[in-house]
Length: 403
Image (cartoon, rainbow, N blue to C red; front, top):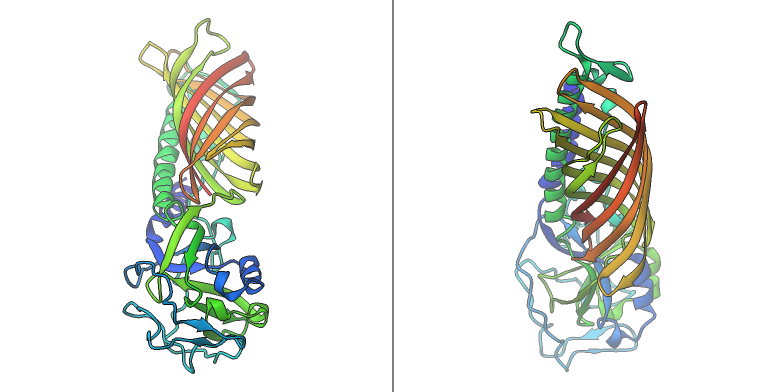
C-alpha cells in the first residue's frame, strides 16, 4: 500500500516540476505544409502554433511589422536593405550565410537553441513523452480493503464494516489531495501554454531540424516545400526577430485529458427511507478520440454523515463516455454515461460494507478558458445495486479539464 501511494504521489507531483511556459512555439507539420504553399508575404497573417513547456531564455519581443524596405525575391532570398534586419532581443540567433530559403546553410551546432526539456505529451505536442497526473489503483487492490463482499460488525475486532468505512474515507481523502496537486500543476503548465493562432512578420526566423539532427534557420517568407519535406520540427521564438502577436486560442480536445471536479451529492441507501447528502468528487483521466467524443477512467468519491456521529461512504470506479457535439461560442454542450463497480460502507452501529455495480447518465457543459483548459459543469443521476437493494443518487459538480 505504501509503495502504491508513493508511486501515485510521484506521478501526480510530476507536473509541478515541469516548469513554466517557454519562449518556443512549435509549428505543426500540416501547418508547415500549408504555409509553404502560400505567397511569402501572406504567410505570417495566421499561423497555428503550440507553445512549449520549459525554461524561458528571455522576455518576449513586442510584435512589430517588418519594415517596408524588406523584400523577398523570387529565389527565396530576403533583402534586409538598410534596416539591419529589424530588432532582435538578446540571445537571438543570427543565421550564417544570409537569409535564404532552400539553400540556407545547415548546421548541427552553433547558436541555435534546441527545444527545452518537457515532460508534457498532451495533444501529441512534439517532444512530449508523458502526461503527469492521473488516478491509479483500485480500492480492492489494497490490503486494508480486503474482506467479504458483505461484512457486519459486532464480533471481536470491532466490526469489519467499520474498518472498511474508515479506510474508504482515508483513501478518498488521499486520492482527492493528490488529484488537486496534479490539477494545479497541469493548470500551471499545460493549461497555461498557448495553443492557437499567431501573427508574425514574413521575415521572422524559423528554426528547423531534420531527421539526422541537422539544424538551420530560414525566414518564414523564404520557407520552401523542400524545407518542409525534410523537416521533423519547426519552431519560432517570441524573444527574437520581430516577435509574435497572439490572435486567438483554439481548444481542440483531441488527445489525453485530465479532469477534476467537486460538488454535492444526495444518495439513498437500500435500507434507509431518507437521502443522505454530502460532498462528491470526480477524478478522471482518459482520451478524446475526436473533439466531441472521449472515454475516461473515472473515480467517483462521495460521502455523508449519517446523523449518528458516523460516516457513510459511497464510491464508484469505472469508465465514462463523454460527448460534446453542440457549441455556442466557447461553451460546449453534451452528455455523459458511465458504469462500473460501486462500494458503500458505514462506520456507525454494527458497521456494514457492500460491493455492487452502478451506472449513471447526465448532462455536461464545458467553457473554453485557454487552448488547453476548460471549466467543467455536470449534473446527473446514477443507480447502484447492492445485495440489500438499489441505491439512487443525484449529483451536481463543477471543476476543470486539462487537455
